[in-house]
Amino acid sequence: MSDGFGLFGGRVLTQEEDVAAHALRRQGWTISAIARHLGRDRKTIRAYLNGERVPGHRQQGPDAFVPFLEYCRQRLSDDPHLWASTLFDEVTELGYRGAYSTFTRALRRYQVRPHCEPFKAATGRDVAVIAHPPGAEIQFDWLELPDPPVE
Image (cartoon, rainbow, N blue to C red; front, side, top):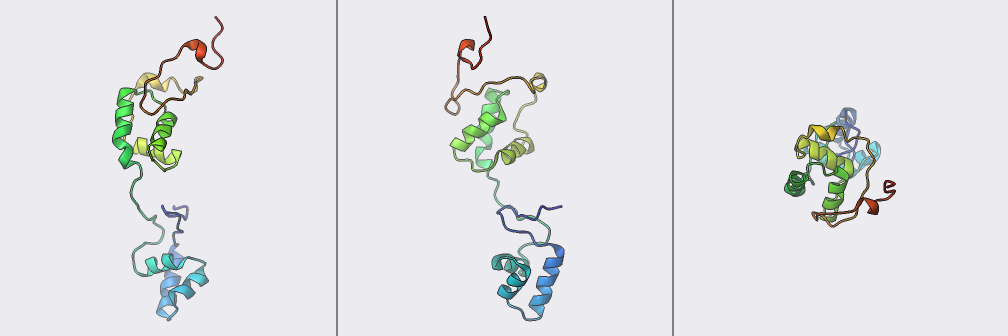
């Protein structure tokens, strides 16, 4: 079931609201009056009355991830163990404007990350984030890490 919000932040009308809007329109109500009565935006009501939108379904828009798909494939091909959060930081600097949850969902949907069985065992281990420019290799000494092991 839909959460009531469309992809662009607009509300999705329920089946009942759509039926009411069409009934009021047949009775001669203006789009503005219907919108006020239902507590909705005029553009939303107009789109439903014109059949441009369907009750209970989200409006589909362009996938913001697609322009970054090949970059992500290349980065994960070069380093299959690259964290999604690091890759997200990189594509954000390159112009990606989606949320982290949308980004990780796209990584799964497009099956960007190569399968690596040993990587599954790494979940939950201690990690260190090291700032670096997108796509650049990094090298560090254990003693440069936060809380280095005692020798």
